[in-house]
Amino acid sequence: MNKEMAKAPPANMKQIMIQMVSSRCLSIAANMGIADTIGDTPYPINLLSEKLGVDENALFRLIRVLSTQGIFSIDEHQIISNTEISDYLKSDVTGSQRNFARMMGGSWMWKAFNSLEYSIETGKPAFSIAFPDSDNPFEYFKHDSPQDGRIFNHAMSDFSYSFDKPLVDAYDFSSMSHVVDLGGAEGCLLNAIKSEYPKVKTTLFDLPEVILQKQGTDTPVEFNLAGGDFFQKIEPIADCYTIKYVLHNWNDDACIKILENCRNVIKDNGRLLIMDMLIKEDEPQVFEKSLDIVMLLLLGAKERSAQEFEDLLAKAGFKINRVIPSKCPLSIIEAVPV
Ligand SMILES: C[S@@+](CC[C@H](N)C(=O)[O-])C[C@H]1O[C@@H](n2cnc3c(N)ncnc32)[C@H](O)[C@@H]1O
Image (cartoon, rainbow, N blue to C red; front, side, top):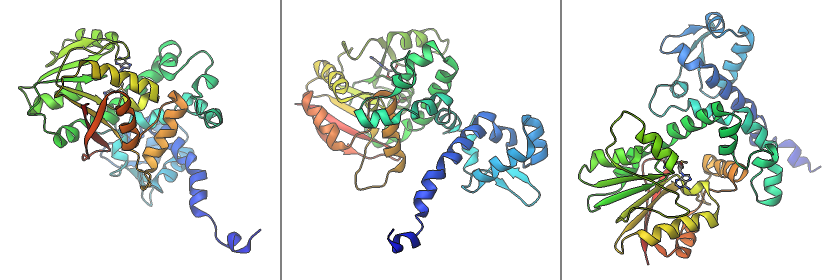
């Protein structure tokens, strides 16, 4: 072995190898609701373990490993407090990460990760290798584990909805007469648009079952509802389509199909706004590039660079007008029909 190499301990690499411990502990802490239990009042470890019904010493060690990364703090009397970071593990704070942490450490996610090698060997999703009865996580949630599905949906909402305002702040919708949000789920992006631009007409387009749920609630909705399948036909005709945090769920062929269907209905002078994370090869982007692996593993999908979006758009009859950064991890790609 090269002596120089042996002298330099690869601290970084050790950190990465052991990171799975923190990740799993974080998820367990989120599941147990430690941050919620502590709240704003520091909590002695013995009372905390009693309240949570777990072993005191093991709980202390779990919190200790998390505290090395600023998640919870422990004083010399073993009194535990929330920190600026662990506050985000509380359930009811804006931008809560609790469900995202629960999802990443969920047993289904770890089971899927056991098959990651298959994805690397083939470039295909490994989900159905790990779960032979399900093609993708959504089928698994539907048939086998609605509870994991609920955590997943909450995780997506918590993660994605905090981006709506920064995205709306980054784009001037005042000249648009009708905005249709494709795969808009609960309609939070449209609510954010409506509150800034009350005169703009808005329509939520999502799967019929999602729209039916929306129609079934007592809360009045501020926008029109359109149920459909964006692989079949997009409605209604409008001058602005937004598609936020959707294309990263699909492989290239599927994205082209969605974009082509949008091209079929968008007005000649219309704007298509793709809101997604953008991969930048010259930046570290640990989170984005890690999430890209999760997309490959679970769905055979990917996070994309602006260039990759440009290639997809060109195949569907669009070109990029400009790329607009925002004060959140998502950027806006403004595309126009060609
Ligand atoms: C990852 S969520 C994104 C939700 C939302 N845009 C956001 O930013 O949080 C993907 C959305 O696409 C919708 N969707 C999935 N397949 C669809 C299809 N074939 N046609 C229309 N909507 C679809 C889902 O119901 C879901 O609401």
